[in-house]
Length: 381
Ligand code: F0G
Image (tube, rainbow, N blue to C red; front, side):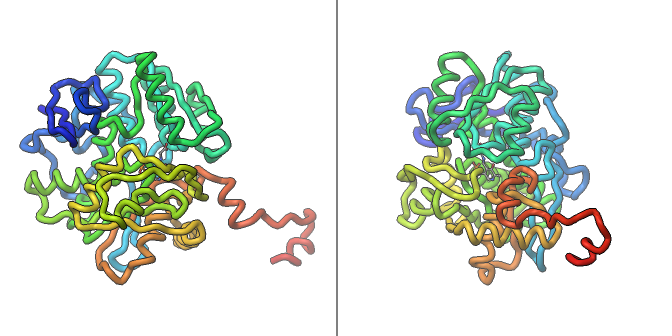
């Protein structure tokens, strides 16, 4: 039905209880049997589980109705796929519905992750639904309030460390190895399988394959997953082409961009990443090799955007009725820097505006306060 394959040494494994290659420690990829594909790309009933025939699960899934997110036209031929419309407000839910289901299949009682915020919010929500314990490591003071609120309210044990995301990921991997917690960061190949459905939905909704897909890149899982989705559609005979995958990074957290510029297949970590887009404030993306491969194979590229460009794109999207958090606006910001190159484009907006209310207030300001008096109100209209 499916197996795991190491992207470095090519070894195959018919087991579900590993995250990386037991032989060489390389990243693993799920290889599914494409002849099983039984869905029609007719635009109807889109959701993650419409594509179950290409998802590696054996039991009925733990689901909160993820996926089926809207595709909004910004200008002619330019669409925003609003992943903020998922149950927890980010694309992570697509991966989590599969990852949490896998945790249940494996009989695990506890799940864990390191996070810049959204993964933790999503994991906490799905763990609550599945009655699993959730453990989370966060970079102290660097997680947007909305995400933190979600993780706490859904009952996860949330631990903030005096270090950045990269350090938190290193530590949670150690904790999982010691305690037997199921790791739900994007190094987990099953989680990425859920996220490949973004590609399926894009073709399902548009009825064609766009020329390019712009994706914000942090830990580099999502761009790898989306590319895999497009590749599977082509190999299964649904489509003839694969879009150029464009990875967009914040200038202060840009290891993938740097590696791409130098034509490298792997990154040199950025030691102290910094950006207003805290979701992608990552210096050592764990899926870097997969992401660079997606960019090279699809003949795409990586691009960097400044914090100012991110905020400008966020405001432009908001003016068009599309509310997203800063990291999510980076894909559109990237597009705006090279718009003349493409006719048919999809930008992935990865998370909802409400995730980071503090950033919003810091860039748009507070409401005008006046006396409860008609004249006072008239004076500021
Ligand atoms: N956009 C948002 C809103 C995110 O939360 C993330 C990642 C990304 C983009 C980048 O996706 O990591 O697959 O390249 N957030 C992770 C987290 C790291 O912990 O929530 P990626």
